[in-house]
Image 1 (cartoon, rainbow, N blue to C red):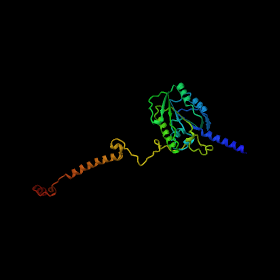
Image 2 (image 1 turned 90 degrees about the vertical axis):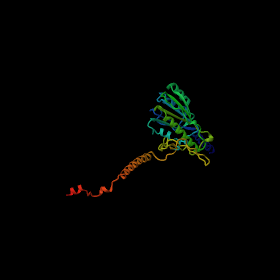
Image 3 (image 1 turned 60 degrees about the horizontal axis):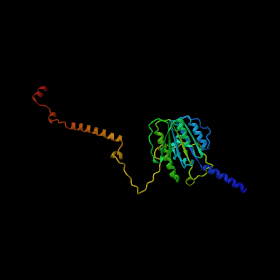
Image 4 (image 1 turned 45 degrees about the vertical axis):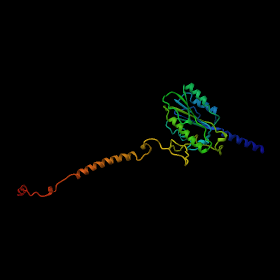
Amino acid sequence: MYLTWLVVTWLGSTAVNAFRDTSPFFFFSSAPISAFPKDIPSIQSAPALTQDVTKALFECPSDTYIIATQPSVNVEDFASRLSAPHLRRYLNREDDTVKTSYSIRDVLGEFGADELQTMLEKRCRAGIMSVDASTGSFAVIDDMKPRVIRVEFPDLPTSIHERASKLAENDVFLSSIIDLLPSSRYTVIYTTTPPLADVKPALHHVASYEMEESFPSGFHTDLKRDFSIHKRTDGDNTTLVDGPLFERYQFFTPGLFMGLVVLSILLSILYVGVNGIASLQVSYAAFDKDMGPAAQKKSQ
């Protein structure tokens, strides 16, 4: 009986550790790709996944291939609807340009991004462009040549709230790169690696947690730009934006400004009219009855 309990405990801990050593994988493309299996597995090894993605891109369906790497995350980091809203929108094909989307909840091992890059260089004759997301900037592409863009995101902080905020910033950065692409023919391979043991968020009920979809949907994306959380202390000094007065403040709307201009013109016209009428001078004799000889003769 005691031996049976030990075996069950060991198997349970092994399963939980297996899930803890996994991380999600996301893929979406503007090209219709049918190479992926119809039955999406919930867990897959990294070598098998690398082979499937390489096979799917072997015919070079896009002009730009973005290989984004987000280290130190797991599937629970993407559970919040505000953690990666743009990525969620692409995966749910809410963007009109996306024709194919594919995601794996748990990937065992590290995806072969270098292997995929080598294949795209040789097969598709694509150039290589590296982007360091920690700087928050990247060079704008102005040609239509095939290209592989490697986007390296920094590790996420250890705090759960800071992790969600930083993940949202990275999501906005990746969406900005996609928006500035010169061609609408693109493919995004979003790879991740599991967090280290000392920075993992709480994993409660991880073995029994199941997602209704391969990636949750149905959240608002009204606020598109700044999802980061900003801290402010009482001792912080606020610096005004340099520039002319009307660029720093908006005293009234353009409609109100145009209305005031038209009103001033109408008032000036009214003033001229009233002043002209008031300047008319008529003598009192003009209203008296004419009693001269000519008037008497006319009356006869």
